[in-house]
Each structure stands twice: as C-alpha cells, then as structure tokens.
Length: 120
Image (cartoon, rainbow, N blue to C red; front, top):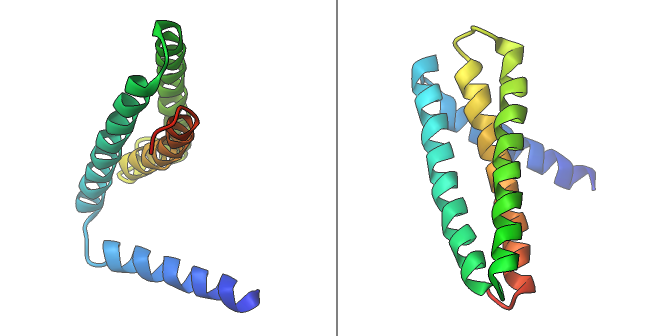
C-alpha cells in the first residue's frame, strides 16, 4: 500500500513539474484556461448525449435545472477557492484549475446519468 501511494505521489509531482516547468505565471494561467475550455467542451458533449437519452420533456427540464444550478455552484466555489490569492497573479490559475476539476467531476456524474438511461 505504501509503495502505491508513493508511486502516485511521485507521478503527480512529475506531471505538475513537467507541465509547469519553465513557464511564466501568464503562461500557466493561459494553459489552465485552455484546460477549462477543453473540459467544458467535453461537458457540453456528454450533456447533449444525456439530453438525447432522456425519456421525456420533464426529465430534460429536470436535467436543465440541475445543470444551471451546478454551473452557479461551480463558478461560486471556484471564486471562493481563487480568493485565497485575491488580486495575485496566480488567482486565475486557481480559478480555472478549480473550475476544471469540478467540471471533470460533473462529467463523471453525467456519465452515470447516461448509463442510467441506457447509453454509453
């Protein structure tokens, strides 16, 4: 168990250092924003797939309401997270990073809905 945890930690540190090494804060912020845009595209794609699988307009309305509420939550949560670096040059990195993390989690939730309604 210790070996696998250490392996995961070492791998995570390698990925972070590899992806950010030698980049300016501005470059890291831009990269983080691009990651969010990519995650948003994936989110929109799976959202559309779920909508197409839902049995009726009532289910679509429920999903739409849930998605709108989730977007408000994601944006508020990310703003709170980034507030730790208020007015700092790294604030956008924290903001986009948290939004990306939450968006990837939402993709997994929507995948569960897709599977629930018979899609993959």
